[in-house]
Length: 298
Ligand code: C5P
Image 1 (cartoon, helix red, strand yellow):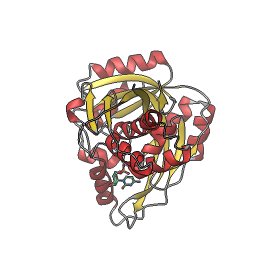
Image 2 (cartoon, rainbow, N blue to C red; image 1 turned 180 degrees about the vertical axis):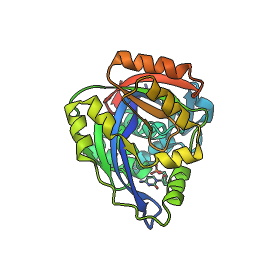
Image 3 (tube, helix red, strand yellow; image 1 turned 120 degrees about the horizontal axis):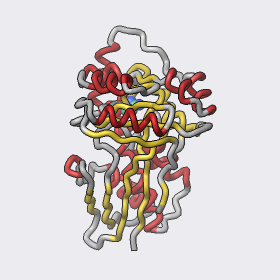
């Protein structure tokens, strides 16, 4: 008996970052859009106790110990329901590792939903979201998918209306970037400046609601982009290559180093993907669409 859950990656179409808080986190206005790259998490009873395995091109980069968010999800849910987390969690990984697309968060949300189903825990949506927020700032969004505005650390979600399908190309970089390191670089770059309160852009929310790719492209913004570019200057060439190939808009995805290109049709996305693929500025290229459904039992 086993349960498999499919969980999407995300891109942040707006990531407004405030000043560092006393707890070290940053208040955000984080507009998440789930996109069609997926990890699949399968859980199976394991008499020998908790075990994590991973397959996929980046599998060697995924920690398989108790620091893995999927393992932590199983442990937290089991503890709340007075049982042992005797489960084998297998991750079929397609979301880039340490890529700024919430791959680790996807695995946490997926394992949580899968263990809930396997164990018949019957946790409410509210409890699942609470555990997600405990696991990490982006994990609640991985559970709900679609599009949402995340406030606070990004964990306080309001679902957003999306009036159409957006076509995206993602350029994967050679090595990952550490999210805490990118936030530290943000702090260094903004030191001594007056960092404004993060607020969602009304024009961007209107563009999402209308499904207007041109208006969305004009309003894409990521306050972490200067920090990611400072740590990984080569990303500027990737952004230029995708823009030159006809993308409507380009930005670093979350804390990077994946770069995201919004296109006005599937055909335009194929063209941008082809050009990026031969540009010599990235490791791999993926074309897909958003919004995508959140964590789902398959
Ligand atoms: O919440 P999560 O564990 O995913 O965050 C990883 C790291 O990213 C945090 O330890 C912190 O350094 C940084 N972060 C932040 N502000 C946020 C979210 C994350 O500074 N809102």
